[in-house]
Every structure is written in C-alpha cells, then in structure tokens.
Image (cartoon, rainbow, N blue to C red; front, top):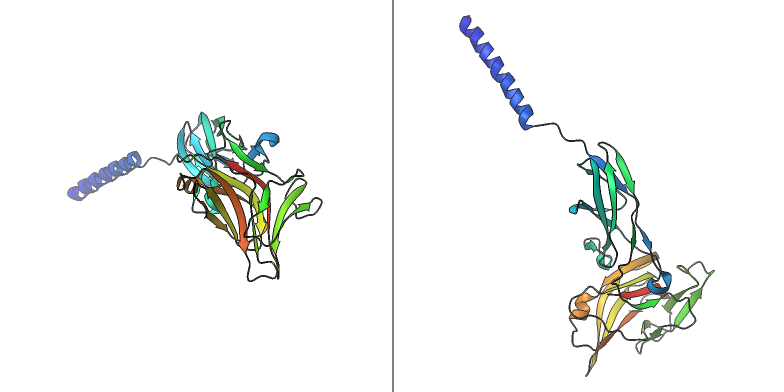
Length: 288
C-alpha cells in the first residue's frame, strides 16, 4: 500500500511539473491591435498631373520600416504591437490589370503616420497619396480642350469622335473619346500625334488611362528607328461594361527597342464578329 501511495505521489508531482513546463513553453497568444484601411485617395495638381482617377487595389504596409504585409483593399489586419509606431503605406496596383501581378506603383509617394496602438483595438487609416516630384509626365490627354492629340493611323478605316457631357457615357470632365466599327468599317486604331523620348535603361515607364470597350482592345507601342519603324503589342484588354483604369508597364517594350529614336502609343481593334464595336478612352498619362 505504501508503494502504491508513493507511486501516486510521485506521479502527481511529475504531472504537475509537466503541466508547469507546458505553460512555460506554450505561453498565451499575444492579443493584437488592428489596422483597417478602406481605400486610398489620390491628390493631384490637375494642370500638371492630370486627373486624380486611380485604381489603387492594395496597401503595402510597413511598421517602423519593416514590411508586415500586402493587403487587398478594403482590409482589416492584426498588428502585434502596442504604443506609438511609424506606419508607412505604399499604394499597390494590378500591373497590366492582372490580379496575380501586383506591385507597388513607383510614381506615388508613400503615406506615413505615427499611430498609437492599443491592444485589442482597431484604428482606421485613410491614406492619401500624391505623385512623386521626380515623375515626368511625357503625355497628358483628358479630351477637355478643343484640339486632339490623337489621330487615326493608316490601318484604321474609322474615325475618332468625341462624346460630350452631359452624355452619361462620358467618364469625367467635358468629353471622352470614342472609336467604333460597324458593318462597313472593321478596324479602328488611333495613336498619339506626337512622339516621345522615353528612358531605355530599365527605368519604370507606365501608360495610365481610363477605358471602356465591348471588344478586345489592343494597346501597342510604335518605335521609330533610323531605318524603320516597328509596332509592338503591349497588352490586350478584355471587354468591360463599365469604365476601368489601366496601368500598363511599358519598360520591357521600351528597353527591348533601345535603338529607337522615339515612341508613340496606339490603341485599336479589328472587329469581324460584332455589328457594332467601340472603345472609349479618357485621362491618358504616359509617365516615367
């Protein structure tokens, strides 16, 4: 009987020690604070930077300059910290409109704010960003002035037209551009009237614009060389029933044609299936 008692006593002591050890090696989970971000705002100088229309989809969030994650907006996410810390948020986009190709947009300034975190509580941040002062706007077209800076190319059998407010199809401002085909005209293509000198050393070059189309829209770059001119497709955009914003990454196209003297941008489509097809454009920006 004594042996059994001693065994149980020893076992109980061992079990107590084991449980205490588990507590030491498995401490309670820390309670986080939370950040909520609904959306970004973009502020621009309209005269020199164009519209504040944007399609910022993601927030790249840094805490004291350490990346804690990239979050698709709107988002609420935990932060294991308390007290005052510096939060930096960088605007992210879908590069070329591809959901699997997300990146920080290199031309927007980061948003920074000192935040006092409290355990278990959420704080809402409303980041506003601006264009970096180092951004060069090689081309701006909002279609609100009388003279057009786009023209149809030799491949187009249709013409450029303007849709004027208060027509509800106008995206914003006074006008938007439209190009269309029908049963007698099958191809529309327009390009910038001017040519542009773009950096060919791998620096970021993007083409921004708002668009709406009921046919696949082909965006291309025209590279003029000393002996010949070549046209290269940058991206095909799918039809959309509502206005969308595109950020097209041009760096590979520009760097790949490094002997070119200058470049034009082109938009077009070849319609052989629809009775009527159209593309609308607004707020074009060529930036580097």
